Amino acid sequence: MSNIDFYFSIGSTYTYLSVTRILDVEKKHQVKFNWIPFSVRAIMKEMNNIPFPPDKKNKVDYMWRDIERRAEGYGFFAKTPAPYPLTQFDLANKLAILGLKEGWGIDYVRLTYKRWFQEGKEPATEPNISEIFKELKIDQKKAMEDVIKDEIENQYQQNTNNARNNKAFGSPTFVVKNEIFWGDDRMEDSIIWSKK
Image: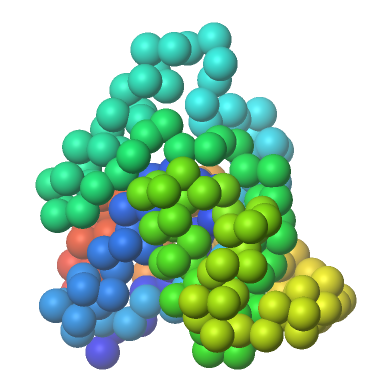
């Protein structure tokens, strides 16, 4: 079975499309995606890249509409504009790292994106985060204590450095056989490449 590294940041809008469909794609194509949360924000700041520039209304409107159309094409929906940018970007991603270590990470990421893009609830903020922990039956007090430990911060920095070393510049990025495939619309291309 092919393995593909899936670098993502909660906070990336187009990543909603990927996390919503990735498990079905994985099953259909018999591949394994390795979920790797990283700080796309840190990398984009280094590149002076502003994804939704406030002075480019036509581009911003297009990007929101594009997400809506693509979601509809996949068989789900997006209610846009969603809250953006995130005020708790790093916390949302560090919780994903903790969750992936403890076995609830994928469910957390998918539910976080669903609530963000279908209900307009911003990730890693209250009351949304408490509701997510409750739904997933996660001990919120313990999770919030564990997420601030050095181990999680170090993993977050390592993941971001690995993304940087792989020349990732956005989320989602799929890495396979030293090739990068950027964007939700390149997921299937990464699978094709993985089977060469």
